[in-house]
Amino acid sequence: MEPLKYLAGYPPHVQERVRELIEQDRLGAMLADKYAQAHAVRSDGQLYEYVQALKDRHMRKAVPLGKVVYDSKLQVMKHALGTHTAISRVHGGKLKASREIRIATVFRDAPAEFLKMIVVHELAHMKETDHNKAFYQLCTHMEPDYHQLEFDLRLFLTHLDAGR
Image 1 (cartoon, rainbow, N blue to C red):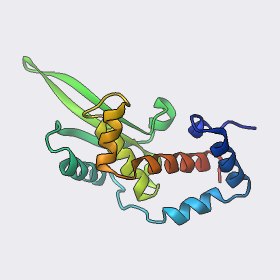
Image 2: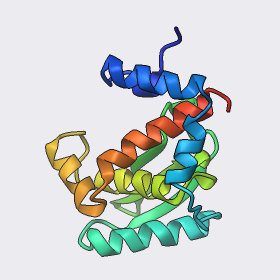
Image 3: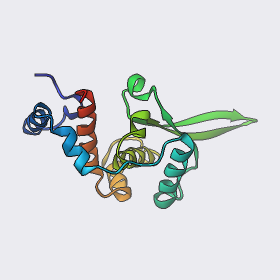
């Protein structure tokens, strides 16, 4: 029995149910029924505007974003679906910080809810670096269904990993 790497922290009965759905070839159909709406955020420019709009709505006082892009190498190299980095550069005699968010290109073709969940996750890292209680409270403030979306995203990635 192959381990389900995206669901490793979940109880055995949940993993067993997911395995049954995969064997019955029903996981993809279930996700497609639940998340039928695609998004129109195709380019890096559109992604920047999308992230900026969410940031302006929920985190007005947070530091400005310097760059937001889809990153095709992200999932393979960093083992992450999105990253948030602060880059400091010397500008004259001062340090200038720039915030970057990179989103794995798998989300270019993913359902709209999954893109929003990843963006919310990375925006929350602008205030909370660790995955602690305050971090998840901020995530659920920006997206009330955050925890369900995170689980369903793990199902989606498991489905993609199964090659179906």
